[in-house]
Length: 158
Image (cartoon, rainbow, N blue to C red; front, side, top):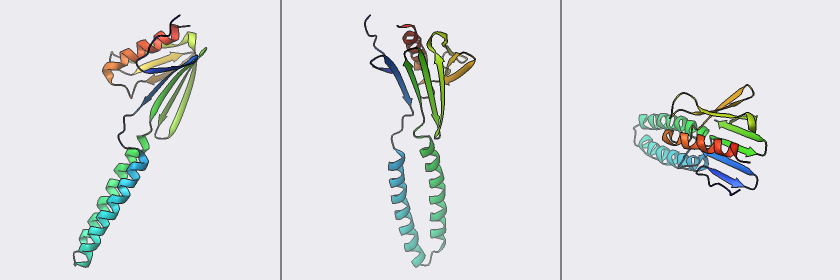
């Protein structure tokens, strides 16, 4: 049987893997370096005005940096979120990572159902043996049906 091509998956030997990740242009370490340079610049300007007699500038610069730091922290917590779906022989393994917390579900290949959660552009529900997992958060809604078809095709292939 020929090896089918996949749009979202990578085939390596007998296993088929889908790595669905958030599209982040900045890594958490790059964001940390940027925030550090922003702090240095903003505090430098605040100290300059402090010595000129405008004492409130440093207070507002600190408040601004604290708020920007909270926003950057929220971004960095979710920058590595992702979904990993792996078809390994008789098992379909799904791992979800959200804000550093990882969940894992394993299904017997022959019992897995692949369905949209509610409509054509909704998340994809993988279910079987009394468990269900929603995937497709990191795929554009109009491409989720293609991902579901691809997973179904891989489950049916020998």
